[in-house]
Image (cartoon, rainbow, N blue to C red):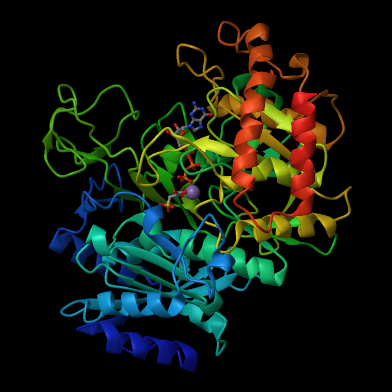
Length: 593
Ligand code: GTP
Ligand code: SPV
Ligand code: MN
């Protein structure tokens, strides 16, 4: 097939990789509908994908990964910077020369009898000053079809690249999906990613976590911008004004849900709306007016399926009704559609579970869908997609929100006292682990800015970068920084806050704080709302004022233990910024005093 570019850096790199992996043939992805259609047909013919009911789910397909390959593998993810110090104490590190050698040994000849697909893709709207280009080589049609939803791909990307050498190299080899030889390696200094022995989402859709967070966070540090694990939403007030919020929650902690929320009825009637700009990643830069602007570098949603339903997230569900790839969900054989836990109360009896065996959802003890099963849906499908989604300038940010799963500690919401205190609040984030990564679920771990698995360099330098960004902003124009926790539980283990659409009540308070319209109570950890300022209209019988006061409370005894935990975590960082050390001492004094 004809090469789609004359770019020398591109062609020579691809030729090197062809010599290494020895494909039977090479196919360039041009971004055309015809090519996508042909690849879908081929994947169905080999059993890699299953075509779903085309009347109910037009252009939708199901894919099952290997049973040992269902989530990101953090223990096998490496930052291959020149020194261990540059990767920092929270990343796995490998010497770049050793890593290349090991990976090339694994990749050698691995495309024999297979096709190499060359995917030119843009993170961000093609041609925006925020955007960056990558090329992923893969031997997986599943990867090609997912990348074609999640990013902008094809000829137009190579035209935008021209003869520039500024692009990210990505090599993906399925090999034998051998867990023992699975590696996800980032080489930030070389703009290079190599991923071997996986076929799952975040391990292999290299534009997403590998590029748009790990490589891009490093680029951002050098170039004066930020790559963050943040959703972007526009909150429209009854007067029609739209304020934008970026929020960082760890994997499977509610970004997609918050980004697409439907306001509670009372709010909706008054004219409140939420518009989704992005559900996972933000690239953020200072605009000419001195404010911070964010774009979503992605073009689709790679969302958690379980728990997505008509009530929790109707916009996400609607987004999956066409042109979507489902991964590791159950297949309903009666009507050739899909099902997952929490979709409805009517599991199919005649079905195939995510591993590929016959399954009766009414009688089986087993789950039909894997807890980290996902949908890959085009962003344009989303009923509440923002009119600014394609805006090459991005949207101006009023607030940054951090959050995670804390059953006991963190109040529903609190506001930092300043930018630097807000950076501190982000740096001490912790959350109970989820099924989005391989390993134990429900264990509290530190996950600063929700970037623990995604920061491409030393986390302490990343915090310093946050501090530097703030120092370059007029405090009047800087976003205000908040922390939220939708996951407080009572002693019986029940969630104390209804969450989902009702989180709008908290967002409304956040925007009012940004506009100086509402008072707050100063506590040892920051500003907490007066209970009267969170509107509970419509929650009668669900959340009483006393319960609200409880979830807004700051328990000094619990925070005392937390301060010790933060101290232990901070002790890992030789390069801890003095500003954060000082914020830590202030918190300690406030809690103990
Ligand atoms: P990644 O795609 O892994 O980055 O996840 P995410 O942060 O986008 O998480 P998502 O919105 O997909 O939510 C993950 C899980 O959290 C789902 O099972 C949701 O049902 C649940 N969840 C989301 N929002 C809330 C909430 O406000 N309250 C409660 N209790 N659960 C929530
Ligand atoms: C996450 O785990 O944060 C995700 C899914 O968004 S993945 O693409 O697998 O990283
Ligand atoms: Mn994510």
